[in-house]
Image (cartoon, rainbow, N blue to C red; front, side):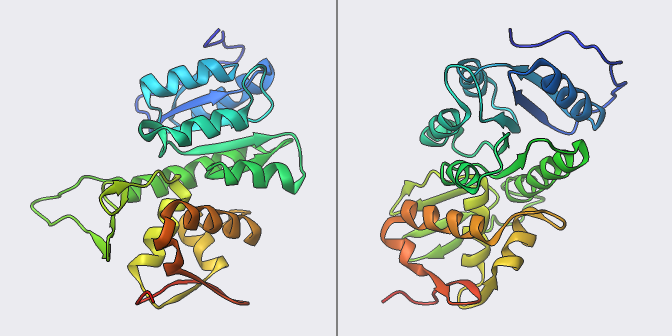
Length: 251
């Protein structure tokens, strides 16, 4: 079953602000999420298992996925892994939902490429804030290639090429499959080589204000970003006790 009958009054919408897919197998939680996101103007679809989620995302490419980790059959972590492994879905923003408060569960999801997370039980206001923050960042980095004849911005460091408007990064001409958060961190660092960014600055730039993302999650994203960049990952340098910077030159 890919959608469910509403038990709440349907919001009266004239415009939508983006397409969101909810992947949640608990009917009450699914309905609560659907209602609150629809009321904010999002076009919402719902599925209750990982297999349906993968099929829908591959064919319809939502603007964001709210993904519960505890799902029947294919769980949320495996869904996240498969999405990030495929070029066509690698950049779809993902906000995880987890009933577990343990750091290991959050870290596992971030390592697989999720952009953010919310721990159950959660406030709908907190979830909406996280969704808005991720959507805003995606819109900032995936705009039109040209605007009124303006030249597309391109960041180049040797054979590493970053195109923020296209949300693309390549190394030696080969595309690098990055999550939304990984891409935004790379673009931030590479746009100001030599400048040291604190973890707090990176969180604010990537996720916006009032986002409860930990320093540990920044380190996890940077770890996987370096791995995906291969030899070019060495250009991202940790500054002990401060944060990270992009080397102006590579030895």
